[in-house]
Each structure stands twice: as structure tokens, then as C-alpha cells.
Length: 297
Image (cartoon, rainbow, N blue to C red; front, side, top):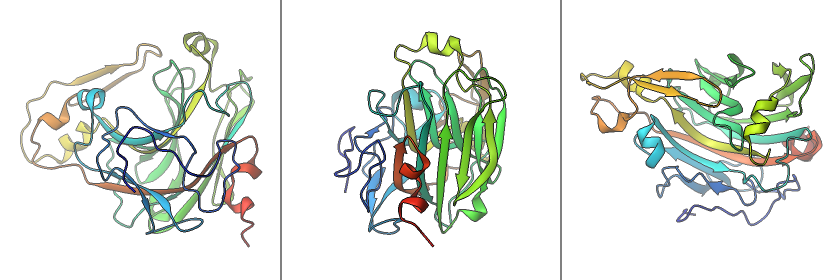
């Protein structure tokens, strides 16, 4: 199955979590408009499946970018939950569940970022939370105001390669007190020590958002790739430093170049492949946790 447009509609399944056996991803999910969208970017695969016969296969190669990404040190292929769909309001807790299979040759390209799941608030640039490949682990990262600097390894890559990893997230986006637990994780049925207490969103963020709606996104998204290219280059590149200012939060991130694919570094980014299955969003753990839904022994 090959994508030829910016929309990818699953034949079965629902955003509320009522998903039939064999469903790979979210119903109605859309390919990010600035994704590379190459013929190989997303396909339905029979190589590996968590449930049923197929999964979604994502592949990202050096230079797979369009428009904004090419000019801002990024490349990606993501599927995006539309803001107007069910389970996108900040007014109540939302549960997410999905399974990831990483091949044995999947590489960590730190100090560049590799996002494999994130939630964004419409009108706010950075993710409210994300799962990123960092220093040998898939880590929880929160880098927006009011929660700067959170970085916690949820599961080590050595425990993910060559097998399925089941992830469940409970996120409460309401304006909570500091002591309230707003983000909780389960990996392969076990509660993770990673999480967050206190609000994920503040009033400033709500005021800037035109809808107060959320979007879950998954796939392979590399940012600040010039960091990896610069570190591994075997040719000299005369590039201007990229200073990336997030105007809404005030966050400033620096990297060697904003247009890394316009230079010959003597090396290319490794090709990354990941498989996703049983992607669900719902109002309870029972609606999204593959281990509960299929009652594994």
C-alpha cells in the first residue's frame, strides 16, 4: 500500500478506541503537510504485526523533508490526529496506547532528536510532551513553559530492538495544582517511573490557542539533524549557526545549520525504519491498552 496524497484513512477503527483486530493506526489520521511524503515513507506491512496480519511501516531517509523542515534543520514522516476529532479537548484526561517495533539496526542519532510520539496544542509551537530517542533510550521530554527541562528514559532501545513494545499514556491537560499527577506511562504493562506532576498547560497557552484542541502525532521526526551531521562529518562545512527561537515560549535552541541538506558533510543520516500497530486514543486504559483488550496471559 502506497501513499499518494496527504490523507491516510484506515478502513476500520475509531479515535475513541473501539478498534477491530488487525487495525494498524488511527482512523482518519493525516500525513503531516511538511513530511517528506516519499513513495516509501509509510506503507502497510506484513513483516511484523502486533495484532492481526499487518502494521504501519515508517521509513525516513537522509533529506526526506519539504518546505519548512528543509529550511529549519528537520526531516520527518508523521501521521497526525486532526484537531477537530474526538478526544482532542483539554477539558478531561485522555489515554493513548500504541505499539512500536524497532528493527535490530535502528540507530540513535543523538545529539539530533528523533520523536516517535508527541501531543501538540493548536496554536502553540512545541509539543506538550513527546517521546524522543535520546542517549540510548526512548525518553519522555517536556521542553515548553511552564515545564522546562524534563528528560526521563521510559524504555531503553536495547529492550526495544527486535520486539514489540507496548506503550500506554494517561495525560491530563486541565489546569492542575503542582502536586497533581498529569502524565503517567506504562510500558509492556508495567508502570514507568517517568511522568509529570503539575499542569501540562497554563493559561497563557490556552489564551494563544484558537481552539484549545490537541493533536497526537506518531512516526519518525528528526529535528536539529545538523548536530549529528556536524559531529560525524568527514568534510569541512562552512555553515552559519542556526538559532531557533520559539516565540511563544521563549525557548532558544541552537544547532550548526538550518539548511543541513544543502551541504555535503561527507556522511548521510542513517535510514530509520519503525513499525507501529494498535494505535488508539480513548477515555480509559481499558480502551487503549492492547494487553487488556486482547487479555494476554
